[in-house]
Image 1 (cartoon, rainbow, N blue to C red):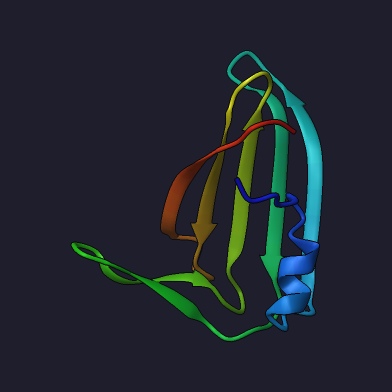
Image 2: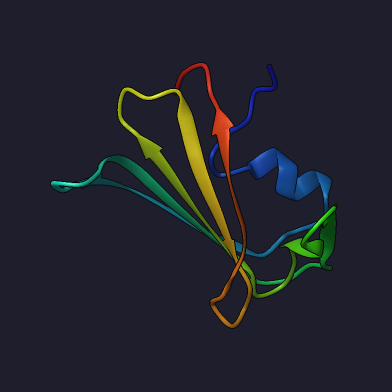
Length: 99
């Protein structure tokens, strides 16, 4: 299993993304208890994943933002990646060992 951090600090440096905004806060509502993380990419070239049905889909690039939901006492993290026009580019669920 790979070890990653929610702020992805080493990932940004490795891929030459220098200007990002990162926010992390706790949310406790009737529908969700856990951490919410928001990353805004202020620069950087676009990179894409190629899906069999959806085709070429942006995963990172200037103006995109990422929302990560980390529910309490669960073994997953939900990530949603938004394009600059605030439409969803893609979303996925990672299985985690712990946080």
